[in-house]
Length: 288
Ligand code: PLP
Image 1 (cartoon, rainbow, N blue to C red):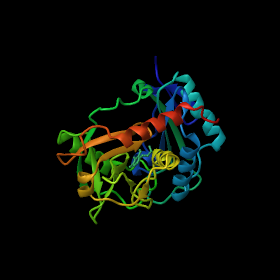
Image 2: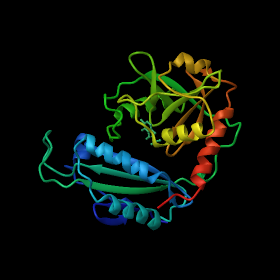
Image 3: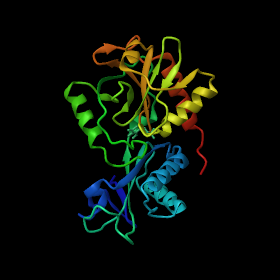
């Protein structure tokens, strides 16, 4: 089945999708994006993702490429035309095409690309008892506005590459004060020995994940003890459980950091409860 992409007003075969050489997304990473999970053909948490896109656009003084409602129509069309049941929809807005000058171009429409990817394994939650990810810690060398979801992801790519070269799956990034910020493309969580669920508090230092927010709601509804604060790699080593969250990984256990096993080196009890909570939420019909 051939993949279909949306590029600035047209639906076309994915392999034919292209942008101009002077697109500011290409030249300056002057662009923002979102990734929304599709489960049973429904867009999960679509409104919060669109709200975050709106915030990213507004922080960069960038215009919506389409009216928000028209954008929703395009997202649904991309899901439908790709027969997407399980996977992700990726959408990226750039400041558009203009001669290469640092200052913003006047009267230039922003551009929009939407693609879809099938990920059949999203249909099934990770089995309890599964081993989980190994991570290494690395210095966080990203810019100071990580709260904006831009495509300026080179520091994340460098960290991920170092992780892969070290034989592990991801890196947890550490700020100058010695605290974990987040993973290369996910939020970081631990469960202390006292059963406290901890994830870093919101600031310009991390991206406020939509999955992070959903997990906080699920945890609160379950009466779990949640604290939003920074934690150190040493605390991760002492933790009972650790996991990452993101739109495409939901809740994924982290069972080793810098070569040291976390907890019993398996998916923890609370991670399992939260993953089940995520699936319960996603299985309930999403409002249009
Ligand atoms: N942090 C970073 C740096 C990310 O790139 C992402 C997702 O791409 C996340 C956190 C998780 O965000 P979400 O749950 O909205 O996917």
